Figure (cartoon, rainbow, N blue to C red):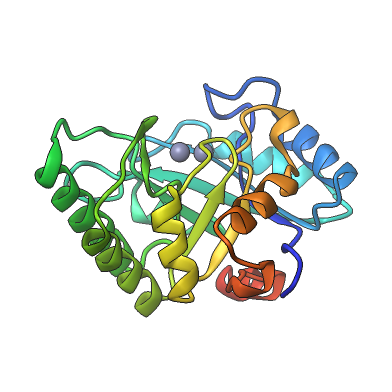
Amino acid sequence: MSTLPRTDIHVHSNYSPCGVDVSIEKDVEVAVERGIELIAITDHGTIPKPQWIENYFRDISTLNPPIILLTGIEIDVDVDGELVVERSIRKRFHITIAALHRWPGLVGERLYRWWSDTLRKVINSAEVLVIAHPTDIAWYKIYPPEEYCLEVVDELKSNGVVVEVNYHHRDPSDNFLRLCIERGVKITPTSDAHRLDEIGRLNWHKFKIESLGFRLSDVNWLSIEDILDLANI
Ligand SMILES: [Zn+2]
Ligand SMILES: [Zn+2]
């Protein structure tokens, strides 16, 4: 694929407390304006049974958008590598994204060992489709040495789990992303929008890839067909 897929499978709404002016309806409107063809609204799952779920599904069911609109959730991973949202709830969503948001309080080699072990446990669980901002943990940027990155990259590749290139966090770090591209990991451009203005900034994703010396066609992009397939639609 020599252009970016016009998809965004990581967008927040008013059901995320950190959302600014986002809502499901407005997210879709802005996505349409900016030429996005498939969007998933993915609010935070930080406890076993998030309170917002019933209202979220009600809102989604009232819309009839001109683009593909999928359900999704960004699930916190605890420091032991377990997804905090109950399985029966996770199963209700098309798109499941796992995110490290909890800083483990480690430094140096112990931090990198924890990072690799935790991500590999999640990837191996076959319970999520996407890993969110892999080298950004609660706004702490981490730069694991290459051997740790490769452990995670190989696990992603062999399990068919997707990595996002995330506009909101400007993540992954260059080294990790470069290895993902070189090893053919599936990659998807996301906004992780908490503000409407963050949706559809695909020029940034293009710049990020090209600034590492790659062409867009070097990337194993997650296509719309791949997403519909993974989401069982
Ligand atoms: Zn996140
Ligand atoms: Zn997010």
